[in-house]
Image 1 (tube, rainbow, N blue to C red):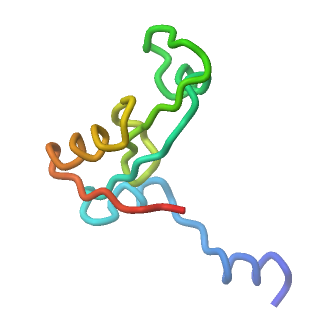
Image 2 (cartoon, one colour):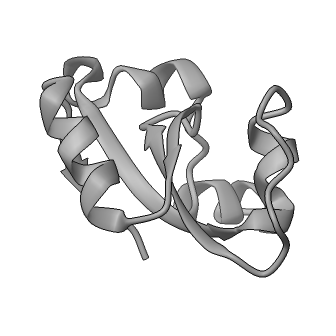
Image 3 (cartoon, rainbow, N blue to C red):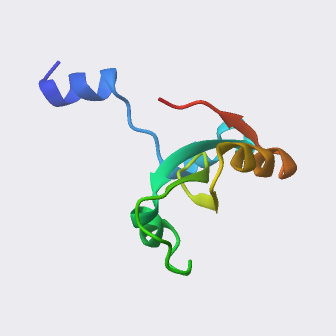
Amino acid sequence: MNKTANDQAIHPTITAEALAQLGDGRIAYVKSIRSEDVPTLFPQAPQIAPGMKLFVLHAADGTPIMLTDTREAALANAWSQELEPVSVH
């Protein structure tokens, strides 16, 4: 096996479409971000003071769903939308 084929065997790629279908589209995850990163994920969001720790609920494919100031609120939003939040490291 050459290096590229070996890398793909060890770290197979998965498409965004396949990620979106994980758990029949019902999987989500919460990630902490800095307020400075909000415009990248939520361009329509109002300007937020720098230096704040915020939390984003993401769909399995990485699509941001909602932004909040607590992890608990992000989890509650996932459950209210019948999404199963999972831990990612």
